[in-house]
Image (cartoon, rainbow, N blue to C red; front, side, top):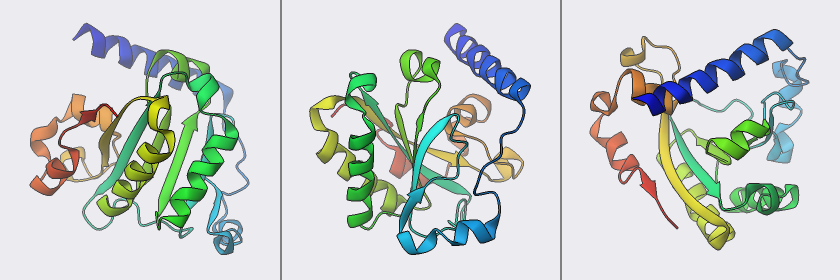
Length: 195
């Protein structure tokens, strides 16, 4: 319980700091601007570049949470993220995802505290289990011995969350895994793995 409280306190602190900094202008907030990226197939993700390095692969208008209310996730943790998760290695991983037929996005938290003191050095989101499984396979093959662990998760937007998006750690703490259907549990099991 104390561990959860400490994690929540750290998340709250980060969110408060971000709120105090105010909104930043993203070059991709306008849907027409985003459509200019579609022909590339792989392009910068739609996260604030102050806080995340990211790529999106596939359609610009990704079908997040449709039709079931879930976004499938894969988390990769590195033994030494500051030296092993280089920009070149991240770009090559993204290129390999594209060649393998993956659709979705990925991001690397650039806030030092997240990279050094928490977890999830590289987070992949996919609109379906098939794309998430592709990302897992490509990541394990490409990163190999650089990884300390990897795991799966889902972001949830269902009646259990009041039809509002909830990320995986928050869902586990607030709602719990008993609210998940069998196909999602099948994707998640086992939840955490070592390469």
